Length: 237
Image 1 (cartoon, rainbow, N blue to C red):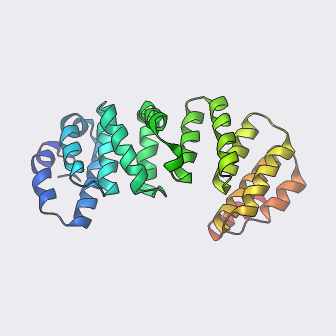
Image 2 (spheres, helix red, strand yellow):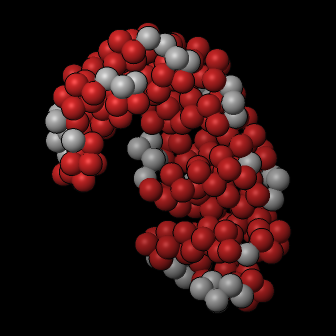
Image 3 (cartoon, rainbow, N blue to C red):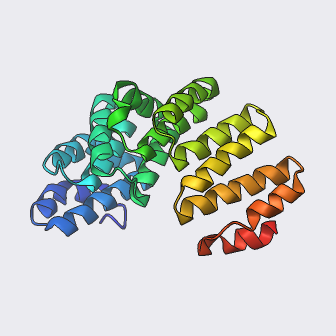
């Protein structure tokens, strides 16, 4: 029924199916419900309260929080959506792909919910990736100056490779000197793991070529190590 988008039988049987599900089946069911919400607006209008109640029975399950965020946000239940985001930020500090898709949807369809979440959050208790998301939300909403101020505070407190790469992006957007932008990528590269080093090198290379600094672009492209970036490296060189 979920696969076929049959909203009425899905909602009629959702509680019963969930009650008989083991943990893995429950995780899958919440993800399927989240997927259905993107395909059929009617399920959001009719099932938001039901999904929210069901998710409350799984306070330690990230997938339940994801479904709750989506249904609550798209049904304009902002308080419930913010609470679900608070749970999700604690359950999935690394932001897995499913969480990334959830947050991307909310950023597109209900960005004010993310803004309210960050306004009330103690960012010191959030993982680096969630802190990076706060900067992205500000950038998406056109608040680049506020994003720049926030990134400066984060750099002073905890200059991680991810934050340094974000700072470099914002510095480039503000047309800061080439050397300053490149210096931020250099710091990210020197501090990161292989994946972070490769992303910093890729971004530094693209930035260098964009600024007509060909030698710098070639040098940074040659420093890309990650296998999944081999095509990008070859293309840049």
